[in-house]
Amino acid sequence: MRKQEFIVGPGAESPDAAAAYIHACAEQRRKMRVTVCQYRKDRSTDQNAALFGVAYKALSEFTGYEAHELHEMMLKAYFGVRTNTAFGVTIERPARTTTTDHNGEESLLNTVEFNDLYSFIQRKGAEIGCLVPDPDPSLRRIR
Image (cartoon, rainbow, N blue to C red; front, side, top):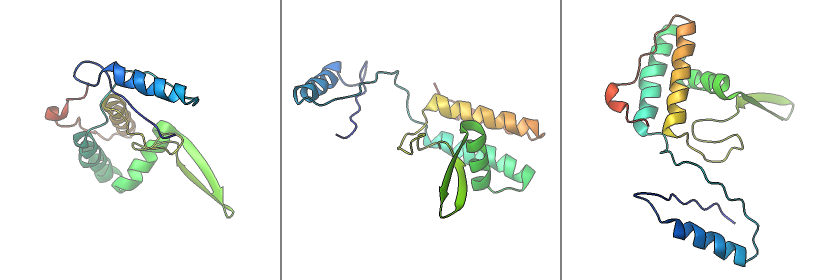
């Protein structure tokens, strides 16, 4: 059974569609996991552009590291590390990324989570004396 997502509420789908889907699965005697959580928009392309074009640009100029190297370092520092070993080689990867969850499943950070990550990167920059500017104020359509 593939994952099915419903966004319900004002300006979105009626809860009836979600209820009908759950009811249809139950009639087929399928075991399901139903999770209800507050909807948050996925991170925007503007937020992602600010991460690489503002935050990592400042850190890159300060440290000499490339943006992709900084991105991996920050993801590891923020989300933790997952260790994989194959053929006698151990590789450390971020426990999750901005596009995949801890299980490797596609899962974009929402706008609030992405904003928290950006703030974390600003604090890490400050720890080494690097000012990581706020994103352009016009991009503050975060919450």
